Image 1 (cartoon, rainbow, N blue to C red):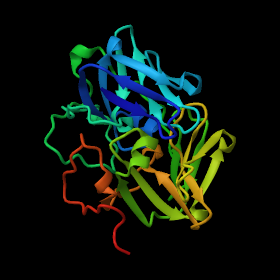
Image 2: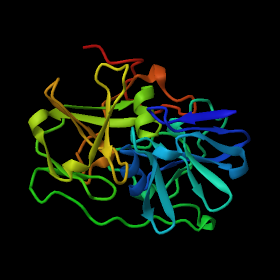
Image 3: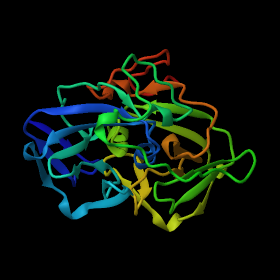
Length: 282
């Protein structure tokens, strides 16, 4: 039995059977939907998948003519979606159990975020294997109209923001809450001064979910498409930006991996960035 759930626990599911087709997807739609550098999905036969709870809080956003994105309306986590009449497509970041398989490839690498470097030895496909019939739907160009500023937006483009200050640091975070929030192997969060971020439109579409037992951990997402959005943190005088929501290249990536003691069992950290079980010293 393989179980999964969203960040708040409202949506829960079980898989009682084999899973397959585990890949890291770098398409622009997945980055936007998850607010992460890439999304990792696997699939199961529909007969082996069961939604245990949460039907009433699942929302859908049609991200392409043939594919919907399902997310929890309470916490914003991407949750499984039924594709066709035969399979459930499942975001691995929300799994509570080890699925027993490992990623087999990177897909849509031609759309990879410029600030993310692939460092493992898995096969890389510029698109999706040709026999799948799947293709990425091109997204409209979005970027800052102000020189020196960065533009960001949600998947449906209902929310847009501008970054006018340099990022002081960016981390790849593997903590369980970030994995659940972004439904991904990890998220890449950049930090700037509080006044360095300004919403250009759609601030009324922002939804917030604070984890009850956490001191301050809060998920911010678009009510329409579920995409992860920046959080203004008045208590620290900073703003936290999920790099997956950026439309412009910040010119830098993460400096380290943090909370690796909580990393997903199915994800191997490779490359030379420093790793810390929790937060780095100081």
